[in-house]
Image 1 (cartoon, rainbow, N blue to C red):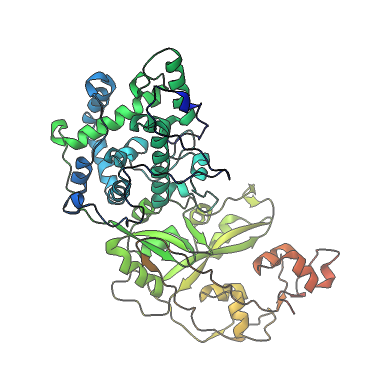
Image 2 (image 1 turned 30 degrees about the vertical axis):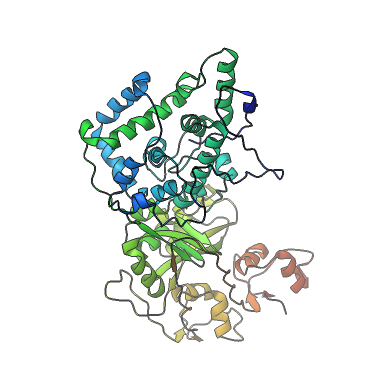
Length: 517
């Protein structure tokens, strides 16, 4: 796994190390963009191939023809040891190779574009066995096994909703950037790989120690931690296995030399993984294999979201996104003393589904304090679903007759609306409903479209809908809960409602202003 970045221990003074130059952070503290002489033009598209590889029909053959790391395996018995280990476990190797098929074309394109050795494309087999959700005891995550600090250093954001270390395309770019930087630091791919595993400082200290003792400073001679001593031999053992699988009794099926997925950019999203998978006509596990960056299994963002969808599924995904139904998870102010199972029942979902997207603070099964949680609100498209669409389309009535027990929130959710949209369609509505009352329903929301792109592109933020000007306080409401529900600050709330400037007590039936007069 990538180690924590440390300052090199004056490697420029180590005459034994054949390094052309050591590149450090720029004066602003950021890492410089690094290239080496063998690199291709940086403007070359990732979808283009070099002349030698353009005629290859098999990604595995592209990989074999690009091996470049020189080693004398006869001098390192660890390589043979790991060859025997993999050969004795053909089922493990088969599963690892099967998982790799989703990712290898993209990795090979990027490695090829940077003129790196193709052994690098096999590195995730050592790091994670191509498991996109792999987690290590040291908190490394994703196919390339970035620890949090190194991930952030190379631009991989990490928050409650998104972990860039598990974003396949972003993490691949970061890993290759880091490995390229390490190669320029050490001038040797085996040393660069060792530093990727245990950190620059670890390798630099081992080199300095050998220099002081007059010992060789090649990878096999360095006093490295046990995991790092075995790290490169494992990769070389896999390289040898891929080079000649028949020798080890392993069969590797041809892998078409073409993209497995396309990047789909959705302008904004608040959708659970299951819904997204249904839109693409895939299982949740298949969808997560390409989109593992959402740790709470919820795609939530008010800006553009990049999703990976198999090439054969992109049209289905886009069509169903425009025409189908899905649950959009939105904030809901849960009250102290409520039970999660009661909330789940109120919104027509299982307790397990509610718990999957929320972390409850409970005592004897009840919320110990007021807590904003996420609940599903049904969204819909406007067109008629095609016959092969897996999702039915709700009807679009223009009126609704209020029944006993109905609330603005329950009616809005039923028709895929917000309370604000329902309020705007019924001017003068003050939040108090009576059985038999007729409400106008606005047209269905505009179509939500996805843009299929070979790479990500910037998009504008989606404007928030208007909100009603007044609201009738409901039993259990609090000042802060109302403010959160209508996405306004407490300062504005108090400004518009002078009665709350000195206290925060609200009473059921009270009318409050929730939009600037």
